[in-house]
Amino acid sequence: MDNESEKNPAGRDSHAMDDTAPAPDARRLRDKLARSDRPYVTLKAAVTLDGKIATRSGASRWITGEAAREFAHRLRANHDAVLVGINTVTTDDPQLTVRLPDQKATPARAVLDSLCKIDPSARFMAADGARRFVISGAQAPEARVAALREAGADVLVCDQPRPEPACFLPYLRQSGIDTLLVEGGGQVHANLIAHGEADELWLLIAGKVIGGGDAPGWCGSLGVERIEDVPRLALLPVRQAGEDIVIRGMFGSRKP
Ligand SMILES: NC(=O)c1ccc[n+]([C@@H]2O[C@H](COP(=O)([O-])OP(=O)(O)OC[C@H]3O[C@@H](n4cnc5c(N)ncnc54)[C@H](OP(=O)(O)O)[C@@H]3O)[C@@H](O)[C@H]2O)c1
Image (cartoon, rainbow, N blue to C red; front, top):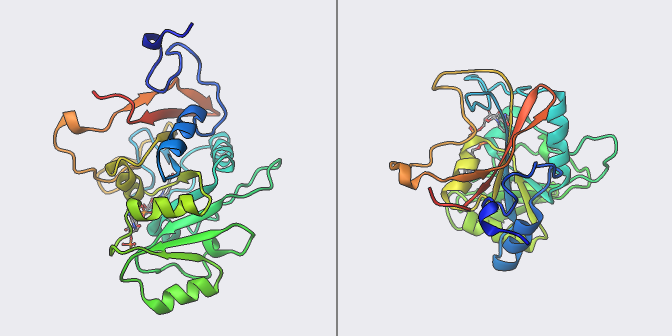
């Protein structure tokens, strides 16, 4: 018989090992899909010990080692879509595909890009069979919206100048995305946490330090002043991925 007091807020036995696959927590996923019109939102970042996702010049390849990168691909393979901010596309030109020997399917990809600045020749836009969503705002120039549609993207134009989660999350869910993996950067992670839309977090942590206030961290400003208002996560047991460690936490489960 389960003793509820023995369970952590993620619903697991607090002494159990976290030996699950890199995939959304099944029970929380079911609950989320049943009670809301949004996808289950997982945040993920590869960080240094001081939480940095890039150096001050924006270099981020590679922070973690090969095993952690493979782990990240497995996490990607277990989500319906990957979401990033336009700065990440501009800086890194990521493919956002799953590159594993035993995995052919690749998730859809989405970018938050208020003005449709994405270069149609960016790797994000590659016509590789994956659905591509460009999520823009009210001031996106019509010609750019049309050019991206012409290039095969589904372009959502939200009413706000910068698209907000209340606009794009229900749209993605209606488009068949039940599980969304948010791969940064820090501004996008912060926006989703600030709106209470993040369900879980995976941090792949390298034994490295970048330091300084000008290198970006995995989470931008949340504008929180009081400790009582700081979002809290229920942490699961730490696991190892090669020379790096993996931390998984569940949002919104417990008040401090
Ligand atoms: N190590 C890692 O795991 C990792 C992963 C990803 C990125 N990175 C690094 O992170 C850096 C980029 O991160 P970043 O924080 O500067 O940028 P970002 O989060 O990738 O993109 C932020 C931009 O997205 C657009 N946006 C539109 N709607 C938004 C919304 N609702 N919330 C937030 N942003 C929205 C905004 O530009 P507009 O106003 O123009 O729309 C905003 O400036 C790069 O150096 C990259 O290499 C590292």
